[in-house]
Image (cartoon, rainbow over all chains, first blue to last red; front, side, top):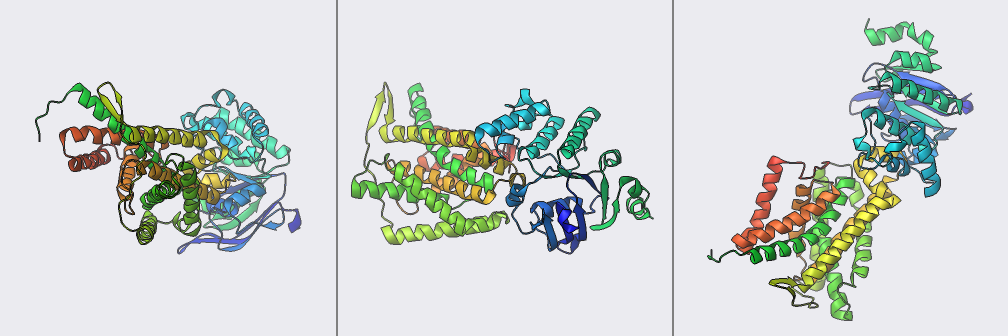
Length: 236
Length: 292
């Protein structure tokens, strides 16, 4: 049932010189669900994100979004089709204000965009800091800002690269609740995450990468006991 | 060295003249800094773009009698288009390449343009004799062309800042220079931003050329000294730091002005480079901090 997938990655390979970062990797996401992407460091998770978003074009394979090929598109074209992402290391625009960080990414008319931006800022209780330069915000606040920047363009598919890293418990719970709400609104979410509690609590299905290859996929409970997964993490 | 006594008036006069020159440096350097900030391209051809702006003003003045300051409305759009064409044809190929590629490419472009200019217009020195004389403010003499040029340079620099801070495209340019990858993933077409940025950078250089033409000689290689000074300015202010380019420009003008008090004109140029070495040793990110 390939047509039911919102994102369909087929046999994607990405090499850097002699290193194969992603090796004939295939995964398919059904709309309206939260998926986890896990694997040891260097297993190709972020590279796969980069292939999907067009930052690092894939060498082989096909990537389809809503049935249409997106491999070969430029990053901004992929974004405009409806895929948003955050980065492992926070990347807000430090010398734009919080509000400007949101406004700069939309193509809507100014007033509509501003109203939406202010709603989102309120959603994560950053509205008091809207005119502050993003570089002056705390780590957690920047993380929230980066997260709502993704929501500005109302993407159907959201890729989150380690949203829980370096976030305190309170903030994390808010973030996880927000992610669950997005799913309830019908968005599809793919999360790279090392925090197993987050993955187990939130994701309906998990893909496991090791040395760029998908070694397992399935519900979190099953994945946890999969021998190949345990081997990949802890060694034989 | 002469043993003329240094008076307060002299000092003030030099400070004022230095700042007047500095305003122009700031304008030209802002263009270079914009291009570097967004694309990490070091544009050696910046000076030849300035020269094209100066010739635009010269010819409009010589052939049509156009006021050199009014000629900015011609030189700015022409240089924007020239910049955009250079970007589209050549510069986009070196945007993600190592710095050496952009240095070689823009060096080549600059040699080419300067030589075409020499063939077309000869190497003769030409001048736009428009405003002469000085305003006298008590004991201080303000050269009219320099004062008007300074004011126009300041106004244009101000306009460029308003554009960068108030308009959507301006904010997208700043976003791209802060995080190119993220800007792309957020849906900003960075190729289009590159095109506008190079056009804008060239337009600022061209405007600088128009303003230089009322003060100094116009000739095909006139731009070289401004490339070096602009480098100096953005190193002073911090590479890719736009307000830094402004303050760096004024500072360079000031230092040159004051140095001329103690040294001959040739030697006072050396002071600028000594300043460069000191900044690079003590604070390599520039006085206001850069993003290099």
